[in-house]
Image (tube, rainbow, N blue to C red; front, side, top):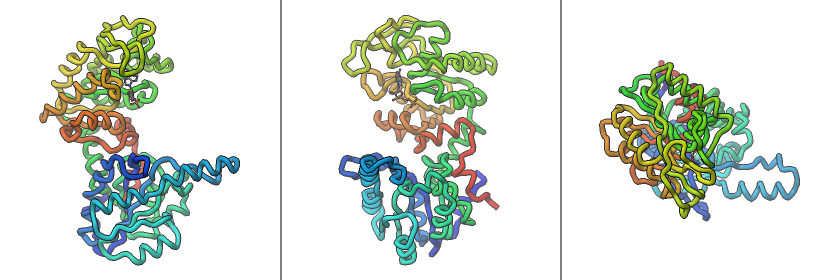
Length: 411
Ligand code: AMP
């Protein structure tokens, strides 16, 4: 990547404003339920501390409501109750337990309290700002907010891969008012993996796509067809492809607007010489539940009243065979309803194959696919599990990400 790295910055006694992705799942009492994202940023955090920087951390958390836009008192009260649960205190507490030392939390992201806290920082201290999205200027990418954030620090670091596809004040706007804006270690690692897939993969390169809707993933499919040798499609979106070929799919998920897209994808794959693999059998159920009756149906045999919720045993072998011949695999979207055990077999089988094969570079897109490999206990056996669902999809779509583009180019 041709962008300034955290390694390039001189950090001693420097005020470092670092955007992290601490948008973590929380328990009912607010404590951190899953600290994967906090752990992801620890390498950069510890490095900045060791170098004697004064580290100011900022992140969004959840989806705060804009209280100024409440239409009446009742809605205002509802918005305020929602936002009261979205303070960064439990996250700062979790971080303090991990890194020790002086970790302080302030109740705003800009303003006198924050400025005073920054002025009081010693080398190696950490200051956690409040949830950036509690300020409506964040998502509006408000220049005044960006300037005020920039005035807190000497240098900026982006280590929030999960948020770099957003042009917000803390991810993009702020970079316009700070001279040195660098990528943190997590962002560098994420970009390096996706860059390899996009520009220099060891071949054969395969993509596994799943999940619910074709329409949501059309741009990514289109771009992947330019890159991959093999494209494997499973999950809910596969039924739209089957229907487009004239097969009965019973009550399986059908994305009507995606039918034409599916036909275009099949034509483009043939034209590009990409091996396109679709399910040849499915595990169908008479209900979307763990207690449903299930049966394996060959292509076109799913009856009304039944819906395909996983790929079938023959398809598992077909997909495993193609994937095992690959050297690089990128995976976005589960192959079935992996959240329900009876329909997790396909996703688990492909995950297990990648876990066993050290010679295949496996890159797992964030979101549901990352959740699946975590659930199966094989996340650490993948070459890379992305921390950004939306950002990794946009990378695979070939889009430029605003939070990356705006970092300082290397001299
Ligand atoms: P997406 O957000 O589009 O990646 O979709 C992920 C969701 O698709 C997961 O929650 C899966 O449970 C769901 N999914 C996967 N396969 C199927 C299927 N055959 N029918 C319905 N939903 C599915």
